[in-house]
Amino acid sequence: MPGHSIRGNTHCHVLIAIESACNALLQFNRWTPFLLAVTGNNFISLYKCCWLQILPLFVSLIGAGLIFIIGVERLICIAFPLWFVSFFELYCKK
Image (cartoon, rainbow, N blue to C red):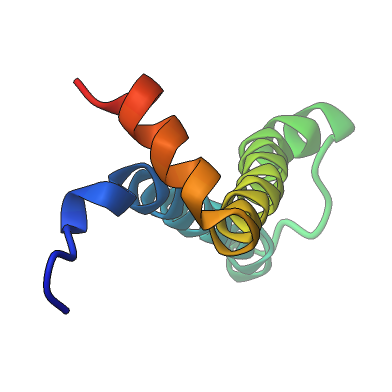
């Protein structure tokens, strides 16, 4: 596409990359029950369980918020393209 710049969407690409990293960290949540089953330790204390679940919970909440932000940003780009271009040129260019 003539005149199309990849740099115009870098903020969206950064949000998508951060959301993907959150999803990758969320996969650590799948290892906890597996490792407990393999070691034969079927029960753990509530304290350990809370610490094992903090990272997956935190990144899942961040990921959900980022998906919402990306969706709103894309909606604004589609619904109000001229306003978004002028906003980007005025406030986001270095």
